[in-house]
Image 1 (tube, rainbow, N blue to C red):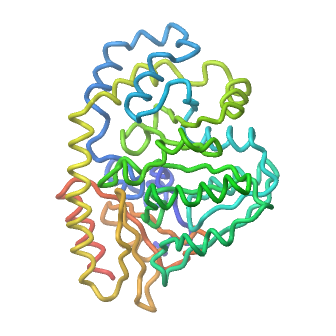
Image 2: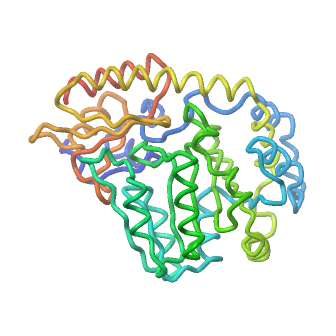
Amino acid sequence: MGIVQEAFHGSDLEVIAKHYHMDKDSIIPYASNVNPLGISPMARQALIDNIDAIKAYPDRDYISLKTSIAKYCKAAPEQLILGNGTSNLIRLILETISPAKTMIIAPTYAEYARSAKLVDSEVETYMLKNEDDFVLDVDLFLNALNESLELLIICNPNNPTGQALTNAQIESILKRCFDLDIQVMIDETYVEFVKDVDEISSISLTQKYTNLVVLRGVSKFFAAPGIRLGYAVTSNRQLLEATSNGKIPWNINTYASVAGVMFEDEHYINLTKSLIQTERNLIFSALSSRKTIKVFRPSANFVLIKLLKEDLTASEVFDYCIKKGFMIRDCTDYAGLGEKYIRFCFMKPEQNDNVVNTILEIV
């Protein structure tokens, strides 16, 4: 079996299993960035108890679900936009804003650029650098913003670099964008994994800046990608009205609404945060001592690594790990990275020990 020449997405388990002639269930998905604790027990029980809810249409306005989300993220229910996953919201908001020119801070999630191009928006990439540890110099960045831009997209914490901008840094960007009449979309898919959410999250800033929309979902932190539930927070009345008028009725299924009790599962939420914080520190420490790799300090539930051996590529490390049942992320297809970068997410302690030891065997 030769080395894989393509980089698989974190959800490509079936494709990978077929390619390597493996049982899908024998593969541990370290590329998916999903909470290793699985679905919230409260959500699981709610789904079991309400299995027959599928017979009825959900509430068109999703009042109960919006109330739960609003309380959880400290926002007003009327400032929420619900979507069929964060990807659906990215597309919906881009279609609504219809920006002539979009700036994206990269390397980052490819869906932003793809969705922008689908609405005929010119994409300008502000590329972060390895030598700066992929950390944004905010002062330099502010000088790069100009009146030709209509939308700025930021992933915070960023995937795949794992770096995060603080609330204060985001506000300085928002002020500059407000003066230049630039809308700002911040994807906070991974923010709930950080040590101090309030220090990083921009949701509180939506009360002050009408040019801001913040996206979140339940796929990663709540381990519920199959539910397809995403939500956005904004105080921009035009955006709220336009997206409400433009979206398909009943775009959130009944089970997603029922599972909304996950936002109230404080024990599960706190247990997740504690597990990830502990494993993040241990993994970073274990990897940082190896001189043949560069480890970028993670802030979320995954870590990015650069391979320093001249004769070793990301696809070779992926191939070595997958044959042991560990599916990491070959980051070759991320613009601005290339064949020397891998990423993997944090699972349960024993699983993390196994994948770290396996990676150290080859790097």
